[in-house]
Length: 257
Image (cartoon, rainbow, N blue to C red; front, side, top):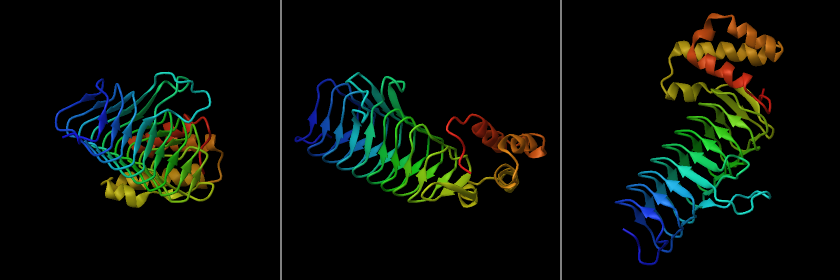
């Protein structure tokens, strides 16, 4: 159902069962998947693709031009997966040519009010961004990460899978997977044990990750020597530990410690 006051460009593709609320604006070349519900006063700009069964609440701005000085009106895109919840006043921006041309958001994510995803970000599945959480451009957020309210992440940072970033945190370096980070300049405070238990991680895996954390971040060894020590231990065979090591080794901005 499309409300009579909504403005939908004739070149937009609207699948069956889509609801569009009063005074919402849908631009050209927008694609909206089956069963998605769009509330009142939502603006969705050209080049945006939205999957199935998403919920977009009032006053959200989806697929607007990137806030990048280098952007000169090129055609870029925003791709949103299925079953995402996008609450009030959320803002998502399209990509830039320099950043690959697209911002990508996976499935089953929860974006609370006033959260912001800037240009060229890549967000996985089942990520939670609490109220006012802000991503600068070119950020990668892996699956199941949680970003606390009023936190801010610097451009080109990565946040690993199942990491938890506390509210009011400033992130300027990569946050390793499975870890808990907090502070005006983020520091690690151990394993995100509560989150891992809620996701039914095996006790053996949690113990192995705790051991890896102590060796890598609290043993006093250099990062290179600490990684080597973990690689030479039995816990290196556990997939989550392997992922932790690989994430650290691939850092470009440096690892939060």
